[in-house]
Length: 114
Length: 111
Image (cartoon, rainbow over all chains, first blue to last red; front, side, top):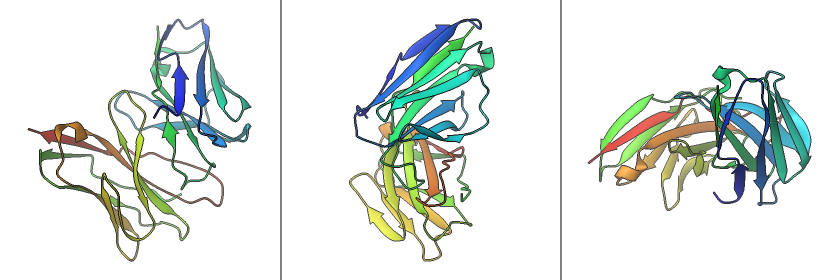
């Protein structure tokens, strides 16, 4: 889906680095999400934003810090990550943050923590 | 949020019809059933959504019995490119938000 873009597509970082993942949606949606997908595991919902306000935070460690400056952009700030945080990070958006609304996913950022 | 149960994996051959069943015994009255497809290292992609009876689009059909405690995704005449993980989700637009992707069903289509 070209409606949701993510940058960078690949990221390698050390445990002491600070980096940010960016997501942008061009669909006019009100809700945006961050998911984590580790190797051969189901998607884990991390954060949900509705109209720039966080509405869901699934017990994610504080080393992951989301930011939603407007309804089109979503960031995930990373600091002092652990090797087990290596995963595919997916951003998604939907018209509204309801369980029945279709989510449109970006291509993901493949993160490797050394 | 209704929990879903799907087979972990399925094998098929090109040209066959594939039916993947999802159980959701505690589905709520206002919940919809949505199926997604995911290829390796990509985000999931919407396939089909339904509330009751049968829904059909250009990609698949979704069969939902009257009690709505299960649903079946039907993929007609699969090809090698249909090899992917298929997720069944159940949720409504009231009562807050949660989306839980289960383990999904890994479909492997052989030549």
